[in-house]
Structures are given as C-alpha cells and as structure tokens.
Image 1 (cartoon, rainbow, N blue to C red):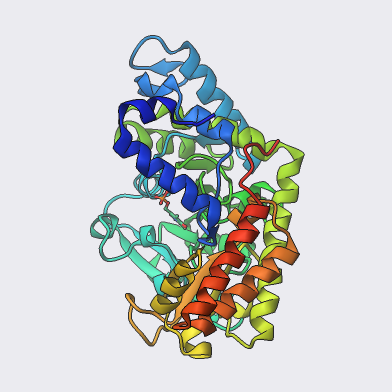
Image 2 (cartoon, helix red, strand yellow; image 1 turned 30 degrees about the vertical axis):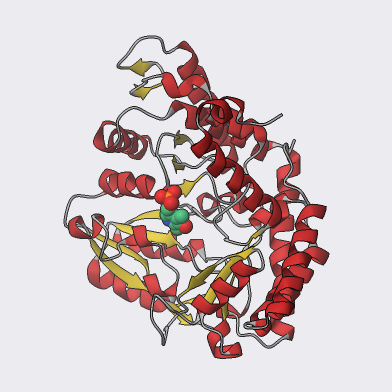
Length: 422
Ligand SMILES: *Cc1c(COP(=O)(O)O)cnc(C)c1O
C-alpha cells in the first residue's frame, strides 16, 4: 500500500514529488555521511497526529491542557535518551543539531564569551562559529587544528596553548568532516585547567556512540553532548542535548531551549525520536553500528590500494574524505556531478589546507550509514568503492557511465531499503 493515499487523491503535484523522491532513494546509493533511512515506524510517528498539539513546557509542567499523551511520549523519549548516552538529563525538543548548539551556547555562556572549537577548515561544523552564522555575532570563537592532516592527530599542545591564552567558557569537541577518534580525556584535562565546560557535538557519530563502537565522551567526564537524531542514529530529523550529571546545567539547557529559543515542541518528531531510540536500544543496533565502521574500512582499503589520498590517512568512523583532485585530477565538483550521473550521491568537500575554492574544492566526503541500513556489508562496500573509482576515471565516457549506472541500480535493487529494523 502506498504511504500517500490521501495526498495522491488530493494533491497530485506534491504526490509527484514524493513518488519521485521514493524512486530516487530506491535506485540510487546514498553516500552522504549525514544521511540515512528512517524505519517505517519512525516515519509513522513523524507523520502522526501529535503534529496537532501545542505542548510548550516539559512533561508535568506545560502551558496548555490536554497533555496526558504528550507527557507520556516525551517522557519515553527522555528516558531512552538517558539510557542510550549514559546521561542524567536529556532535552529532546531541539529542532535540529544547529538549534541544539545555539541553545547550548546560550545556556552555558554570556554574550561575548569564548568557545574553543575545531577549525572549520579542519572538519569543524558551520554551527561552531562560521562567520556567516548568527552566533558568530554573539560569541567569540577560537580554534584548534590537526597537527598532521595525513594522520588526523589533533594538535593537543596547540589546543592547550589557545585555551590558556583565551580562557574559553566552552571547549567544544566535534566535527562534520573528520574521521578519527578524539582523545576526550585530553579535552577534559585542558578544560579543567582553564575552568571551561566540555561539550561534544556528536551530530555525525550519534549512532556510533549509541551503538558502542566509538567512545562515549561522558565516560571521560564531558559535561554536555549535542547531537542530531537523523544521521547515524537513524531517527527523524531533529536534535537533542544530553547532560552527564549536573542538574544546574540541565536546568539552564531546558530554559535555553524553551522559552529561550523555541516555541511549542514538535511533538510528532519527539514521538518519532522515542521510536528511534527504542530501535537504537535494541541489540541489533550494536551490529548495525559495528557494520557501519567495517564498511567504511572496506571502502578505505579500495581507495588506498588505488593510491588515492585519504585525509587523516583513513577512518575510525563512518566517513571518508578523499583528495580526488590531488590524486586523480578530478575536482570535488566534477566528482560530485559525475557520481550523481551514475546514481551515487555524495558531496564535494574542502580538504584541510584546501588549495582550491569552497565551490570547487579538492575533496569529496562520503560515508556508510545509509548503505549499511540497506543491509550491505564489506563485499558490497568494496564493490561500491570500485564503482566510484571507475566512475571518476570514466568522466566523459558516456557508454561507460551508462553501464556503471546500471551496475549501481542492480546493486540497489538487490538491497532494498528495509521497512523495519527490529
Ligand atoms: C549536521 C551537524 C549539525 C547540524 O545539524 P542540523 O540538524 O542540520 O541543524 C551540527 N553539528 C554537527 C557537527 C553536524 O554534523
């Protein structure tokens, strides 16, 4: 049965777009490392009647009546989130990762205060103080970098020196284009020295931490984690903030989310988060998370054998960054376009110390959360990496591209997106 029976009858234009997207997802392979497929159950909750309800406030403390079921579902989401991340407190209302970060900054700082975060050209995210963002007008951002872009090792000496000089209120660990594990204990040690909070923005690796394949920053004493729920965690599009143990921090976070920044929570998304967290607590999610990393390693091997330069020298997580311009003479934009033509979706990306431009950089970024959800394992990840390299070499060869397109489609059809994960 179609998901969209009523839309089909009532609104053919929107229906056409939905069906088009379904087909695009069905026959193409998704390698954007921040994307995934949510289960049917998550999408049912996300499309549910909770969208009708205003529920400003928090469970047991709302500004409107009729909250019996919103309280129930938000409490389920909070309890499961706490269990997943070993947190004492969780706020499940942030609309996305960006909103979670803004609320976190305002909860922990006063205007003019300083954040020490990863350099944006070395993998930090826009929301870590990019000049074009609103928060950059309010807070001061200083940076640490990698010591060696070919191993990915962070320059912890520099991090400490910058911290001592600028006395940040927050030391922020986290990235959207970086492939190695961080030394969280080091961050905590330096933060203690300068009296800063430690926050990990785990937006990309949420599912890998929940699934136990990457370290949990809370095990090393971090204060707060911000995250998304739609990337490797495989939930609905949204954000979340969890607090390790300090009640005072938790209170300030709650106030900053509502009424500080947001209005009524999107309770349909909160319900979908609760369902996704339930899936992530299921033992099978550990296997999924482990397979995501194994698949990334399999792709790493193919690129290494072809002597394509990988930033950080490879990967510990779900993501790879390849210097395709330096190694193959294909720019990031050319690579994105030609791969799209054969049904492989990924994004161009700046590499550390980028010699080219943001609009046409040297690199591509890709990852394995979505293909792993389709049930693909090392053999298919290897095949895909080989198809990628063949496509990058085919460039203008249309006959070769038609064949490659068919191979990608065949692979996708062998691994349809599953409706349920548990
Ligand atoms: C994706 C991401 C965000 C932003 O999340 P949105 O849901 O798109 O707002 C924030 N921080 C990091 C590190 C990210 O990867």
